[in-house]
Length: 367
Image (cartoon, rainbow, N blue to C red; front, side):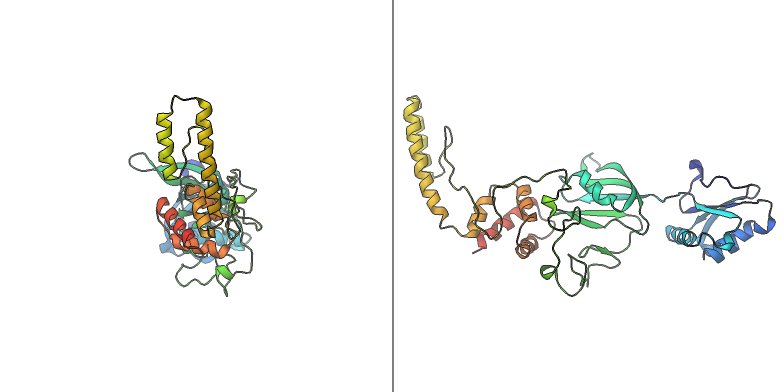
């Protein structure tokens, strides 16, 4: 049989398998023995005990070879790709059952609010094809903050086992993944004993003293960080404050209008008593009294601002902010050394409320 098709029918595809097709099935010298001893053992460096099974159809000149594991299969395919014109393959076509080996990825995000599209964008840089397989649920049908993907990887590339979007860590798992360092985010070794810089991947210095500018962990470009990345579709919330060592413009004493109450405890009690007694009085008189209270509170509090330290100003500004707003601000923190110090104190695996408490305490302790 002359081999016309180089595709195995879907219904007979088997993992870790290749198909060997003889151009001349009637050539006895290039039958099963030649396939095993020359193509597999001599050319592909595969021993007989590494072959799980051979399904042969000699009259059609077809031999389906299944290897013991993924390692043997990938090794044979790599040799085949590197030496397609080897004379020992003359008169044969050899190709995998799956033209492009698909793998399953399980991705865990430590914050369920990270946009799925951004995770797909990062993974897509390492894949020829990436297909979303859905959310992974627990036995109660509740999402576990994990996703499932089906992927065809680029040749010689693996998606990072851990990467970061903003301040959120994201883990990626797949079958056969090599050793991965969660410190420098590179394959080939573990974090214990790693001396590579976490910013540039070069030895000789630490992250804090790295001479190269920090890169955005979404587009990998310099000049900006994740929160301000122009390639993100989700724009960060604008904060009317300059974060860092510069003076922050914080409104410490808002003006009270209508039904809002003053923050001063004595004034608040007086206000409640007056409101109960004068509930039915004329609107003009009530507004006049309330304006007087607001002006008094405002003048006192703004005088207090001038005496606050930088840490106290940071604390006062962020104490009523949400966890997400606080993390968004830390991601764009201008002082890299101070940022790393804060993140180090926060640690890993703490609850959002505990992280916020640690950060606020750090602010209060600043001079």
